[in-house]
Image (cartoon, rainbow, N blue to C red; front, side):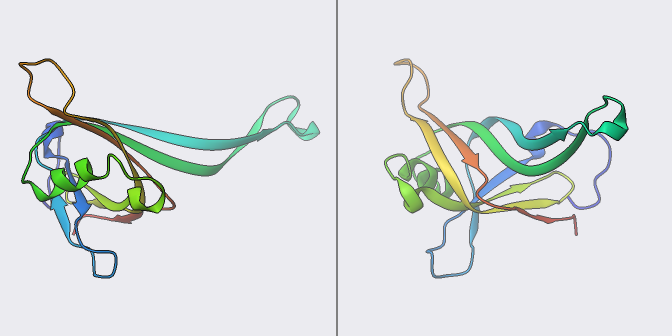
Length: 148
């Protein structure tokens, strides 16, 4: 995918979760059957109005967070899907996993120790395919690796 230009369909974005144990190096696996995602940037903006700006507000972006909300289908047996689903009943540091977002042009954004907030594992209509819904919440500064 490196070197792509122009518009692209959203499905070319891919999401991976680190399936390695805490002691070993990262081993990212795709999360099967992801259908939709949305991204929210939570920005902290400090505002002040000094005398010399004649009433105009000054601003400085002082903090940032990212939340990626994903809807998927529960796919038992897929390493990434199983790992996410398995975090549904965890709390504290056990709910943290490194997560990676790969863009169509090859850019990778790694969120080390992201908080995984599972919001649905299997609930729905009797004739529907079981869902897997979750949020990935940044937990510190991500690492952005531009396309190779």
